[in-house]
Image 1: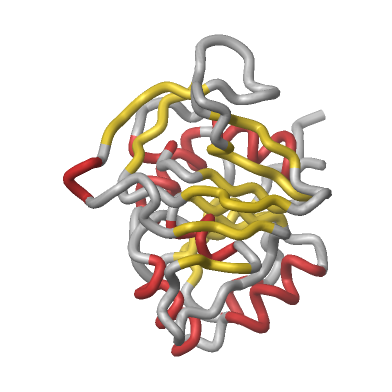
Image 2 (image 1 turned 135 degrees about the horizontal axis):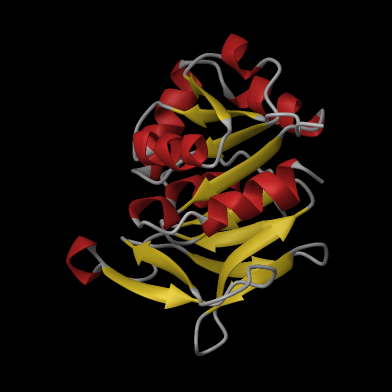
Length: 198
């Protein structure tokens, strides 16, 4: 019997949403670009891309997305945030502007721009618990740092010095880096198989 295809939304307000869509479709998922609350209906999962967290937060508010997105997640929709997306998923954002509201989908405090400015960007490989083979590829662009994790948050990936780089709490997954800007689709496959499919 054919496995049921998952329908994954990609928040398309700002940032690297096209790259996420390409990764997901390459893995066989049906995708939908999401800009309005009605487009959250009947999604198995949603990706919140990297980009500029303050701009995405402002557009989430303008588009009336905060309440509907939280409600969809509470009703079972899986959510995956990378870089800026991870920032917005946290309960607390260090260094946020006063008008930057967190989605509070995870019991995590996060620090914006913890790895430096745009000029300090880099690409590296990182280990990921539950993904076999070589470490996964990730691009760090003004990446955030997970500063405090609640008891129910699982660390999936760490740097050489033990810094958490990717965390999961139930049907919420967040990575400090951009896996979508590489040719390595295994993080997206993990999201589809282990988070959406759980």
